Image (cartoon, rainbow, N blue to C red; front, side, top):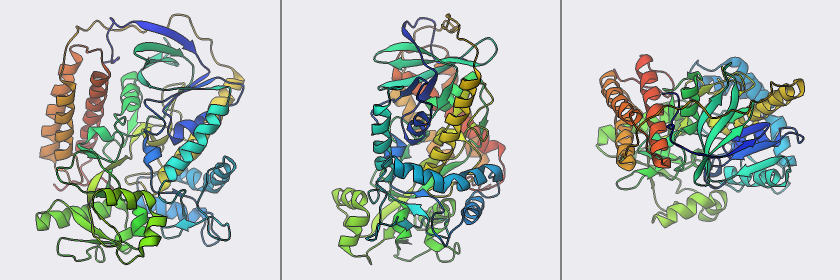
Length: 513
């Protein structure tokens, strides 16, 4: 199906911009800030700026800024975590540009944590053999970064922040080049005419029953790109964070216990209180996330439980409150004093490693269509993302995307035509229970495409998801719930297809069969 909507929609307004960025997380805001100020740029925010995975990011941003570290060492750790599937050229771009982008953020007034001497503090997270992870606000790095960049975007006369707006479909001209975007904004459909569209819509967490992602993470940009003919890559690689805060009857958005807690010495313990990571990997509790998640899965299977424990009780309460203010307070709300109590945790869907395939400048196979951040597959993560590389990827490739667009705008682009109403199909109005169907999709994916997978389960799941998708395409329900459900189903199908096609176990994709 080419478009999510039917012919009976009404276009309320048509607006022109040089560049349209879909998503107001770190990748979207940073990209917009690097578009030349003589070019009009619109940034779409599906909900508020505080509703994004970037905003929720507790962990830090990795960069080789210390004297005992180098970009080559950072690259080695990235390649090892990626299980042989990283693009070495993309990794080199990422790590080489890291320190420079940290300097840019400091110039943008991002308040990174510092020691008493005023030097940047660095910590470790899973898979890193050096202290190279910077934080802001203790465990509120994403929030501090987004807030700082949002202020700058609001001050830029060339940037329009359009809230409560989400991408419905990508528009292409007769030559297959981007010519606009169909969006839903303020209760109606609008067309934004542009030659440059950047997908920075974040992850796909709402495909799963339990996720650290916010409610808006329904894969809108990825699904729209697929409908437009964009190539996807590594869709089977879903990163499950080992330590989501467990609660009874777990479903929906899950609070994350950052890997930084293990970086500060926390130990994973099973139901018997035994530390179990020592014989799993040389880095023990700081092993790459896929290894830790599978180790926890095995412990839960063996004991017949649905969680294990994280133990940071050896650290002083005042120290924990200062280093992890958000985690400390959220756990207290759940009745857990992390300075005295074990923290119940379990693996939970966290990060989408795959996405829209791009080159080293963020460009997809469709002229004028770019992708940045979690929605993109740049090649840096391979089969398993190294902790704290995702925020860096947003910066490095977001800026490269902006620079590529700037150069093309200087050269000149074909003029936009006046007729931008897409050739929509005529689908009958239907009424679907989008909430119930969404829960069903989530249940199926959670059961068959989680930490451990088998061919039989994947095949069964794919059959059911395709049937749901087929039924949805027979009609059209003019609602956000319907479009999000359609997008979730499209992404779920692509994940299952990728998981079935990759028969070997590698990185975050583990086939028990």
